[in-house]
Amino acid sequence: MIFSKKIRFTVGFVTLLLFGFASSHLSAQSQDKQIASAHQTTQNIVTQPEKPLTLSSFLLPLIKSAQILAASGQNFATNQQIIAGELSETDNNKLVQNVASASKKYNVIDEFKKFKFSVNNSQVFSAGKLPATKISFNQKDLLTVLTNTRKYYQDHANADPDVLRTGLLGTQGITIDDVLKTLDFMVAVLQEDIANNRTTRLQNANFINSNFKVIKWTPYNPKQTNQQKLRITKYAVFNHPGSHKKTATYNIPIYSLKDNLAADKFYTRYTKQDVLSGIYEPGGKEYGKVEPIAYLTRQGLEEALMEGTILIKFTDGTEEYFNVDRSNEMPYIRGLKATAQKRYWYFRKVNAIKGYGYKIDAKISIKPGVTFAGDVLNIGLGKIIVLEHTISGRKQLQMGVIADTGGAFLPNLHQLDFLAGIFNNHQEFGQRIAQMPDYANAYILVKK
Image (cartoon, rainbow, N blue to C red):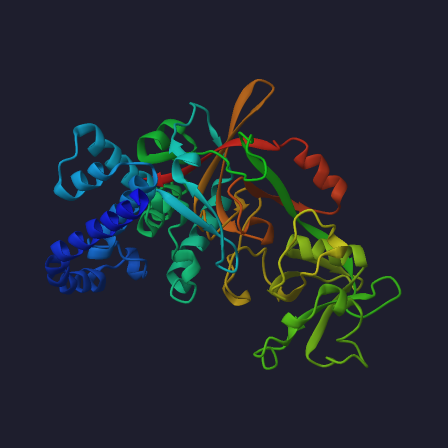
């Protein structure tokens, strides 16, 4: 009976608020529409408008607080006090804390926009400061990736609403406008410093601390709750030997989808194992629907599927870049060996190493040493990352930008993948990454 009374008074509390604010909500609606239509982002980029105060936005945290109070054992008299506005200062502070706590919860989603888990922003982000150490990066390469990432927003944001998600940083008040302003500022600084043939100010930690919000990123790993630093994996573009024609050695094709036949997404019905069984080869049930564009070894195929971009050196002496285009939309399963994965990618020939993009012709051209692959849906495209680690007792800082993603990062709040370079083989790659950290402190920079 007591519980029922609490529920009734919770509902009554919400109902009173509903009537109390209905008139102001109605009068505010026309203003909301004017605000939404007038709001534009930097350089005419359409982003999510900041939400005006509406009835629903006002009531939602209050409703949640009322539910919290009702479920936490607050007595009948307390519910009456809430409705009458007779809360003590202590109770009022608790109410404010409950509202603030509810508003900072974020629902993490996967690549199919499905809910995976909730996290409070304070578990992941906090105020930070870079140590007084020079920040390492190649100035021209960083400028290239920043410029290309900024251009992606300008050219493709309307067609790719995923990049307009504020994600978990939105709970910190960081908007897409803030991301664009950060990119614009860094591009301007680099252009000026390079034109004047000087070391860029962006390598000065004091300049960064003065001009940017430095947000410390604490990893959140539901499966490994004691992880204290961000995991830093590494990926690369490899030179692969291959052939334009099928041979005894290079007998595994990589395929390109034919645009005029791909509309019904027939390719999403087939696993990697189906493809390797020969469904696209002469006599196969889908013969003629795709085009073989190169031939690799089986190991070369698995590496190409994992790497995303490859540089094939053909037996005739030519070489070309190829990048993943569209997948069969089957999820990547962590912990499952590569040959057993059902996910399969179709490729296209490209003119550079490619990162994130909603379609092959829109993908961002990226550079090694300044590019991270990460969780674009929950962390965000174009976030500026600084890693802090220690080598031989000396602090090291490394800067780059999230301009790529992958199945292993959707969702992933505890890891980044660093594009280490272009290598002839895995031995060269291993020697390079042996000098790099497996875990590091991580910071996100946002222009003040």
